[in-house]
Amino acid sequence: MANWRIKSLDAILATAERKSLHRSLGAFQLTMLGIGGIIGTGIFVLTAEAAQVAGPGMLVSFVLSAIVCGLAALCYAELAAMVPVAGSAYTYSYATFGEILAWVVGWALVLEYAVAASAVAVGWSGYAVGVLENLAGIHVPSIIANGDGIIARMTLLFSPMTPELQIALDTGGLVNLPAVVIALAVTALLVVGTKESAMVNAVLVCVKIAALAAFIALSVPAIQSQNFIPFAPLGTGGIISAASIIFFAFVGFDAVSTAAEETKDPQRNVPIGLIGSLVICTVFYLLVGAGAIGSFGAQPVIGTDGVGLIPGSPALVAQCNLDGNVLLVCSKEALAHVLRSIGHPAIGNMLGLAAGFALPSVVLMMMYAQTRIFFVMSRDGLLPTALSKVHPRFKTPHIVTIVTGIFVTIAAAFFPVGQLASVSNGGTLCAFFFVSLAIMALRRSDPSRRRAFRTPAVWVVAPLAAAGCVLLFLFLSMTAKLVFFGWAAIGLVFYYLYGRTRSNVARGIIETHETDADAPPPAVSPLPGAPIPGGAKA
Image (cartoon, rainbow, N blue to C red; front, top):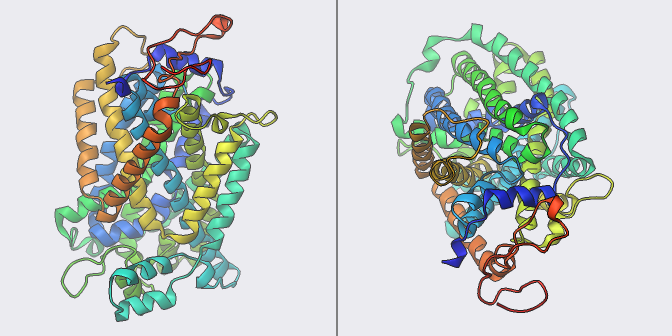
């Protein structure tokens, strides 16, 4: 099948050389980018979401998610060092499985990064509103501080009015204005430049690490064993379901691979950034999770039917309003809420302030990664070429950055964080799954290629990573699964209408190195009906 044709690694590297991004990032900056992408809404906000699904058992959920991500990170490290260009899993899939699956993976990455950026923007909004309320005494009206009300309104289209739904309608907002502001600000920063963005990110990462260290120092000594009982109130299924949510807290590490084309000595520095950032963040997560559970408690809200209420649902929103938001699972600023509740209100407010300053670094990292995926897909001809234009002054793909920023802003304005995170995880797990398969395929098809980093025990690590991705995907919410498959279907329609006949491979173009720029590009047999340079039809 012509659609499955593969773009060789040599052609991919040549394409990057002809139309490349400036290399300005080192190992430290990459590690900071990784930590900046990982530590964020997942631990600051989604701790409450995970507690509602698993209770104290979310500690096991953290471990399960870390294992799956760690196995995937080992696969990413080999591929990113071997193919140091932008594009991440999309690029690796193009070199192994061909164009149509590469498109599916690239389209899934759009779902991952753009929706993740929206989720983090919403998480930042919760902390920003809490800081203004507790530190400055400024009350931000709910109607402009969250978009939770849209879920209740959508539910009303398919369900009759209930008391819980009425409460959700009364308390939910119409638009999340703070999330809109931060999404637009990060978009502007990314247009200005990569190096400048990385420098800002490094400062914000240090703020986040200091805030989490303070939380650990104050919460861990206050741990009480009874807060861990019952450990798994909703069973093993709840723990795995929480892992599929908290998985969002780890996925920022793969954004490091999208920076490979802008990295100095990528064969050495990219594996350091990938694995180093994941290890550091896993240690922090387990300590923070233990401190939150042990010092305050993390039992879920159970419905009248004995089943845990769904995070973000109108029923849970209504119950939390009745309980006065005193539970961890009800908080939009979980860690600050814990510190205020265990006798450290001033430091809790400072942690909220630190999160307010630091969470934008995650929005930055997610949007950064998204723009690079679009950039490479455009460079390959699968998306309009205007998206791969580089700004003459700032040297950044400014058009695609602005387009991504608009999409992120709209999603952040109208949807709650839990729904966004679950939807994002569907795209992430798809990408990780194909990366796990790609490394095995390349070991078979191109065994002699130089590998600066080799994944240890690859025939054990890669299959386990793929299996872990499938397991977590199966435990995603039904909404997240439906959105993923719907998004994939839309992507395939767009591919067949546009990318199938306009991609460089379909047109018979394979890029050459700069030294061969004057020679006509070598060609492969184009798809029937595809336009050929010169205006003819195949």
